[in-house]
Length: 311
Ligand code: 13P
Ligand code: SF4
Image (cartoon, rainbow, N blue to C red; front, top):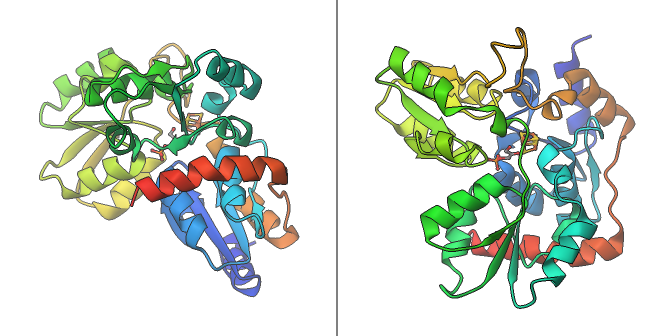
């Protein structure tokens, strides 16, 4: 069956928009109406005129769409597509942490559940976190959750001392400085692109640190021809498409020599979505993301604040 053709037909019939994150399988990126980082996908969801949004990404991305567009049907091809980082921050424990620190402004990374966002003042993504933190008064006391690596990076860049939740992403924690140093020895002219969810020794080796969209833009515009890429390897598809003459080298995860055939630089959650599941979800209009309306009322405020501050 030609899933791509069937998806395009159904999309038109149902006035649906297909959004995909850069970590999606290549064939999903190829049929999507828009692909982007978490910030861009949220911005597009807030603007869309479509009746149905199919979010080819992970659960929190679908939730963000539903919170921004409560009257639209929001589908995710596989509802099991979670996020280890979001899982590292249970809402009840985060609420306790917030209550233990009165007087703090609460910033949460978009990689969180709606319930965590409901305890948040401003949501951020890796694409706007530095800008948003810099927009706050210098003496503002800030809690940042859940990614300890992104939080430490923002602290270093902005000179703040945000209180950090101790969470992390299982994919980005796999990249090691040793692997990158080894690759630099083999490709001395290559520039190193790093997502800020990586650990500090990896971030310190970067020529550019940023969200997936920031790294992509840098790779396209840089005069450099070869790049060592320390983030989920799905981004290489769009990098290669936008800069066909350049060479992109994915950093092998720390464990790859020990685990021959391991794909630890792929997010197992993101990869749960397949072209067939995308077709079926568009055809059957399920599985659908639902969020308690009371929770939507609370979680929409910090997301809208992020969108305002990102303009
Ligand atoms: P971006 O906002 O950079 O796309 O990152 C999302 C994500 O899940 C990174 O692991
Ligand atoms: Fe979550 Fe990490 Fe996957 Fe991004 S790569 S969706 S942070 S588990």
